[in-house]
Image (tube, rainbow, N blue to C red; front, side, top):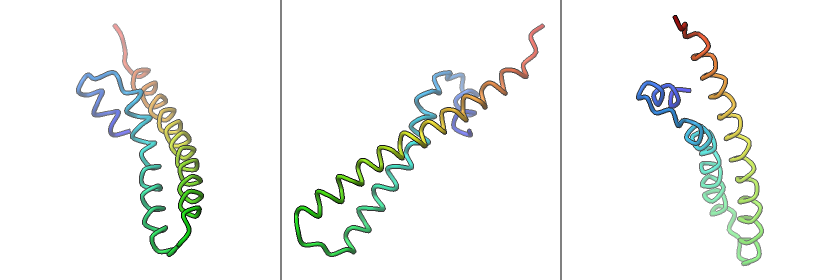
Length: 89
């Protein structure tokens, strides 16, 4: 919300993709955390790498889409609330 508010204050009305990407960036954190966790597993087969990172990539894409959609929808609601309170004379 703060990112969208600052963009609107700077008269940058193209907030759609930035709200989606800012909320979806949680998936990058999850993927990096899973890579750090994988180092502690001490695997020795190459197939383990492919399976783990393949599944984590699919899961992180899903997380990106879900959190990005929630972020976009909440930013859309926020903008509707702000602009509905403007009185035009």
